[in-house]
Amino acid sequence: MESSDEPLSSPPPQQQQSSSLLHDVLGSATAGIISRIMTHPLDTVKARLQAPSSSFASYRGPIDALIQTYRHEGIRSLYGGFGAVIVGGTPGTVLYLTGYAFFRDTFSSIASNLGGNNGGSTFNSSNKPSLTQGQEFAVHFSSGMFAEAVTCIIYVPVDVVKERMQVQSRESLINDRMRKPQSYHYNGSWDALQQIIRTEGMKGIYRGYWATLASFGPFSALYFVFYERCKVWSKEMLQDNKTDNTDAQRMDDGDLPLHYLVACSAGAG
Image (cartoon, rainbow, N blue to C red):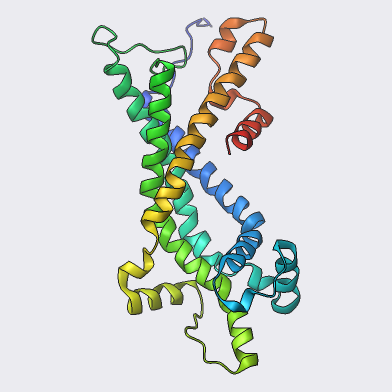
């Protein structure tokens, strides 16, 4: 029986792109759910401390607000609006991360074609367009801004519902003690969404869109600029420690050790 020395053929580009997109979607959805489970109580505390209502004036700080909320209202109040975040926020996180990857790849190709490379594009060993540092900054900055602008279409309604659910139980408790009428009462995230649209229209559900974009747009843009640059520095560090420079030059993002990616994410933020 004759053996063949021919290398196995690699998957076609369309199949590779579909697999990469699937990994991005599943990874970003999982990351969004896990991070929200861990941080939602702190987000509830932040919403209550920032609320203008006098119902929250008794809190002496974040820790006191966390303890008082748990002691008087239970763990359920700390997770007020969690349903809206999971149902709406998870797709938002997926759109945010996959949208950034889409804009980054699209803008990278455009910048490479417009870069004056004798009418054509040059590619590095990872089969990605080679860009100057100035082009990389512009691509990552604009990709972060575009990703935030698109994602805010989902994030802003989710935040409106979430924040109203987060402050509702405390205000209801205070109003009951003082026998004051409650201005609104929601039986859940879906009921809150319906009531806000019914009484305030789409303007109510998108209240603060431009303020959110003005605040988080530059943050997202600069975050991805520093995140991508940190990954480049990490690859260079690993390349210096490798004896086989050929393998180091072919290193992709997925080849970076987990602790390097965590450090890049935390440092960029």
